[in-house]
Picture 1: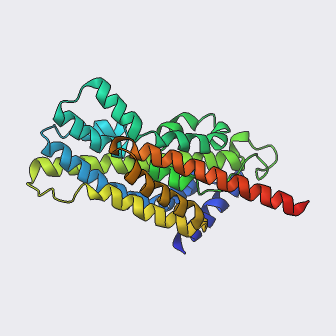
Picture 2: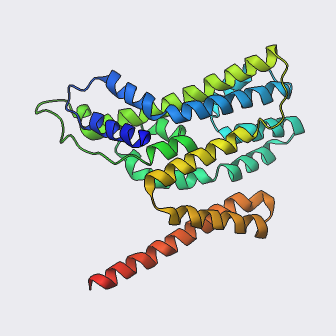
Picture 3: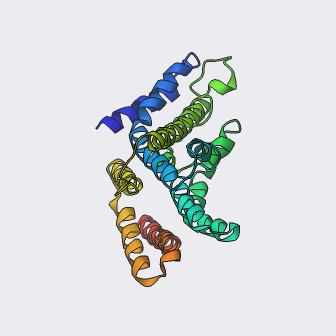
Length: 268
């Protein structure tokens, strides 16, 4: 219920006329991204702890969060660094792990295309959690809600673009600050590290539940879960994630095609 109220508030912020204040949009972005704040702080702290536990300096944690910014990729990087993996092997592993972002990019292509000012950063900052938030927003385009004579950037679509930019930027700030806190804590205080890496999986589960409650189309999630189980049992571990994504995508597309034909036939 709380998330739906926040979503409604965001839409009203974006639909206000040109006198809408930037701090109102920032406040809405803060409220909207609050679940990611809680998750990224916990996971960022876990990453910072693991990084310094592996023997690396604390400042590397926020630096990776700024210039690399890939949660799962950063966790894997620590293991690759420690194992002395070569550049080619590291690039291949990261490509496979982050291949899911191709699907994210395609699904957000139309939405980002109308945001020339913000789209480059939004593309860079499109993590799993940020995608889960931004993909749930309704698309608002054009200056229809702006006052006559107001500048084009005050249109509804551009206000939402600013809101999306602030949401993505806040998410990255949450991650960078969390990783810095964890790295500093790991440097100054001795910690036990059992079970810390599970924090990332836990956040994915929470966001999936949020999406199920919001979208209310369980078929997509059931198909994706079935594809994941099949990939784990039928494919080698190194390609199981990519295979699961490809299988889920094909199955969902097939179901949508059959459903569209069925509706079309009924209308005739």
